[in-house]
Image 1 (cartoon, rainbow, N blue to C red):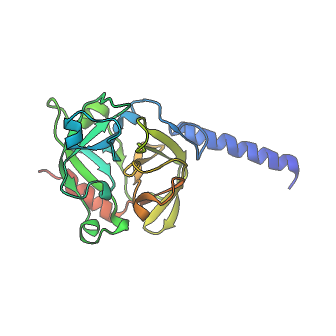
Image 2 (image 1 turned 90 degrees about the vertical axis):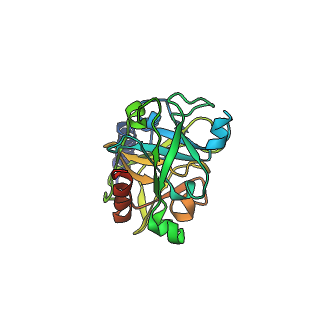
Image 3 (image 1 turned 30 degrees about the horizontal axis):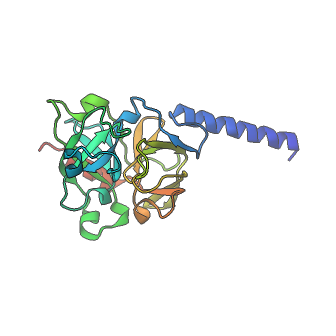
Length: 248
């Protein structure tokens, strides 16, 4: 291949990558992690806290996982990783959390929905969960910050996705856009630096505003900060969503 043709291909790839990331609201070129700018879209993503810490007002440094608001008939549903909601504790979701502040309120988790595969065997291929939130001032969380559609059965890597989450050590969310690939038939992976502990549960949102992954799964999201995982959202995730959105 001629050098000028190769150079042209590299330039076109860089432009296309930047355009794909920008179209999805990403922070720039693919595979770059940066602080997420506060927007109506990032307001739908929040940090999870133990209810005891939230009650005492000790929000700074206490968040342990990430979750995001998904569309539901009752406007009260969030998605996260199953390993974030196991146990008997009580949890609080803070959408749009930044630097100790809760700009859209603190929402108490009312009910948790875990897949059978996780409850019975802690199967990493079932590491996704939903939680229904109590109302706040007679409103559902979706009425306040909006929501993304939870999509199952999509093709991994069909488009880039944007991952937004809260590392333990940060008081602002970070964001990275890249194209996921299959790790195996039940798991997908994405190369994004700096997605450390605390980002479990982060939504993978495609250019159509659909959640097509939730950070978790293999090694509870990955053993390194540079490669993260999600279960492939298939029949089990679809059934769990139906259970979570059924009339109480």
